[in-house]
Every structure is written in structure tokens, then in C-alpha cells.
Image (tube, rainbow, N blue to C red; front, side, top):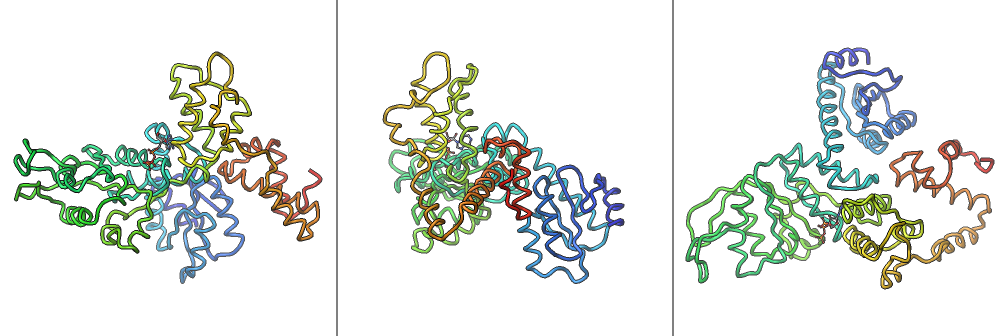
Length: 438
Ligand SMILES: Nc1ncnc2c1ncn2[C@@H]1O[C@H](COP(=O)(O)OP(=O)(O)OP(=O)(O)O)[C@@H](O)[C@H]1O
């Protein structure tokens, strides 16, 4: 550890004084001499507020199970000890990358475009930013409708540093007759109606990004043609014998299950593995409910850019939080707009502004049937009242912390308790003590 501290210092990395971890703010380096419960707990603790780099210092290297356990506990990366100098260089390189990544995550390009601070959304955006800014890899974005696939493609273009344009092609609109011309372009007179030469998507995307939206709808013959262009980096216009070069980064999106389509023969496996070098799946809104209210604020500001930001009363907020959004963020945006259009005059938006046909969506009163079923199950199993209450409390705390990215203060606010009370309850849960006295 002493040799590493010295080598890190000479690599320009600021070294703190943590007993078990050293590193610049936001980063932690943990040297592992063995893998036991105490080490995993340390990594878990540091991992709540910092990216942890674990360095395996055992002479024979840790067994694979232990390495996986370190990553599962929250280590962001794992290095094998070689020499102090080499390790320091590897650590410095990773810290530099993480630092650049954090700056991009905090930039307007990212925060202004993709709203949301929930843990699953932040994890997704971090992955997208890293692959967009530091690699040239093709990206496949899968996910339900309205989850932000199109916005992610735009962000990849913004961060990729590509000099060329973002060329968008919606594969659902490619008719068999015109698809060749749309993709390859054509020469004058190549077919009836081709009165002048025209560039296709491959020419337009040269030096930039080709975004194939709904790629799962691409007919099989076009999949074969696309594969050839990706492999060879060149194509011929319809009606021409001359090869044209085109270098573009490919980003594809679909809400289909392409692996299932491969199994049925509807999608080519060789094309899939070329477009899916890196995959991401923006989660549906139901998996990131903590983002609903920030998104609502964002859409209200968009609807009324010069206004002071309309307030929502508690009942509307509750309605928006519990409504089912089959069309995900697009559905939420439309719902907010429909409520906002009905609102007039000063004062907060109230539940009276919810359009009549929307009111059908309102969530049933709580406690609802699934809640009663869960309690009935516990009663049938003979659980005591104290145990049922404890389990409900623990579950609520765990969920609130998950949704608030482990931020104690925000989770406490959400649960209507003080920061200190939540800390005490968490400690009691960790120590296995009943917390009924708090
Ligand atoms: N994180 C977000 N922040 C702000 N707006 C968002 C976010 N995610 C989605 N939206 C908005 O929701 C709408 C739908 O997003 P987008 O078109 O990117 O979804 P999609 O997954 O491509 O949908 P589809 O599969 O139907 O094409 C857009 O108006 C977009 O601006």
C-alpha cells in the first residue's frame, strides 16, 4: 500500500487518508489481500458514494467466485496487482476516464436532454455516455415504445464527436420498390421516375451516424444488403457500377425482441451481432417511478417556457404518480399536456383539470387488493402483528432508498420521517434489532 501510494502520488493522483481506501473525491481504491465478508461490506459502504476500484493483491490471484463477489458488492472495476508503478498507471488511467465521464454526465448536453435521476436511469445514461464518447462501437437500443430510444440516438450523435450528420431512417417506411433508392441513392434514369440523381442514406451518413429506427422491421433482402455495406464500407448507387465509400457509425433501435426473431428466421443472426456490439435498454417508466415528477416539471416548463412553472396540488401529483403509462414517457408527456391545456387562471393545477376520459385511469384507493392479499398471506402463515409491521416498514425503506439512489435525506422525505429517524431505523435493521421503540 505504501509503494502504491507513492507511485500514485508521482502519477499525479491525489491520495486521501481513508483507513481502507485512498483516492480522489468520488473514487475509492481498495487493496484486497483476501475476500471476506468485511471486505465486501467495505466495498458496499464506499460504493454508495464513490466508484470503487478493487486491486487484487493476493499472490496467486483471487478465485473467479471471489472476483465476481467483489463486483457484485459494488466494485466498478477490478485490477490484478503487478508492480506499484504499473498499478499506479492503470489506476490513473481509470480515474481519468471516470473523471471525464462524470463531467459529461453533469454537462448540459446530457442533463438538459435526458431528464431523470433514478438509479436505473442514471446507470443507463452512464453506459450510453461512456460508449458514445469513448468508443466508435455500433449501438443497439431496445425497449418499449416511448422510453427515449430516439433521444438516446441523438445523445450518441452529440457526444460521438462525429463531424457528419445524424441520418435517421425509419425502417417501417421502407417500401420494397423504393428501399434500394432510399438506402443506396440512384443515378439519373436508373428507373422510371428517376429524373435526377439522388443521394441515399449511406451517402448522407458518411462521416456521421446512421440511425436505423425500428430496425426489426427491415425486410430480409435489405438485411443482407445492409450487412454487405457494413462489412465492406462501400456501396453502389442504383443504376451505377462505381463503388462509393461510406464510413458511418451505426445506431439501431427497436422494440422487438431480435433474439426471438433470429430464432424464427425473421432476423439475420450475422447482422444482429454486427449492430448489437453494445446494447442498451432504457427502462420503462414503471421501473423508474422516481423520475415521474421531475419529468412532469420538465414538460410543464416546455409547455409554458415563460411562466413561473405551474404548481400541482397533492391529488394531481398522486394521480400522476400512480397512473399506468403504457406509452411510457410519451404517454406521460401527453397526459401532462392534456391536463395543462384544461388549466386556466392562477393557482395550482388541481384534479379538476384532469380530462374526464382520463379519470378512468385513476388509481384505486389504497390499501388495495394486492396489499390485502400480501397481508392475508402473512396472517395465514401465522406471522405476528409486530413481524408484519416490521416487514412492511423494512420493505418500504428498501424501496424508497432504491428509488432515491440510496440518498437517506430524500428517502426520509419521501417516507415522511426525519433524516435521523430513517438512519436509526436502517441501523436497527442492519443490527437485526426490533425498531419498535423508534
Ligand atoms: N428521459 C427523458 N427526458 C425527457 N424527455 C423524454 C425522456 N425520455 C423520453 N422523453 C420524451 O418522450 C417522448 C418519446 O421519446 P422517444 O421518441 O425518444 O421514445 P422512443 O423509445 O424512441 O419511442 P418509439 O419506440 O415509439 O419510437 C419524446 O417526446 C421525448 O422527448
